[in-house]
Length: 126
View 1 (cartoon, rainbow, N blue to C red):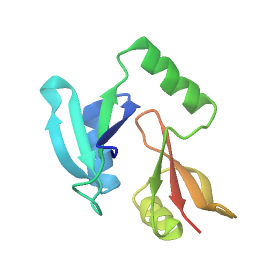
View 2 (view 1 turned 90 degrees about the horizontal axis):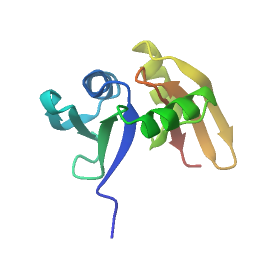
View 3 (view 1 turned 90 degrees about the vertical axis):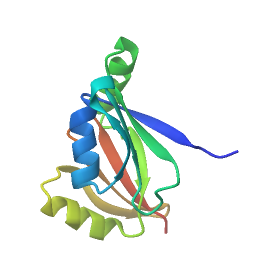
């Protein structure tokens, strides 16, 4: 068994789709704005796990999303081979980070705002 798709709750799937594809560099898997449906895949693994950009129109989902955001807790973690390089690339694209790359015994991480109601953690294994 493996993970085929996971999701993240976003304020607006169309806005999120633009940010995740045009800024973060994910690939379009499925985009049907008329159904409020957006799914992306990683450029490095287009046949790997898909990410559903799910609308926060459910009060439970919205409360969960808001709670994480208010506590500065990342909603999801994206793995990268080089956090520092990704950090610099995204800073140059205008992405707002709430933490700079920080190295610990578990790896290097940085956290940014996805402009769609979430904080996202970038993580590089040691």
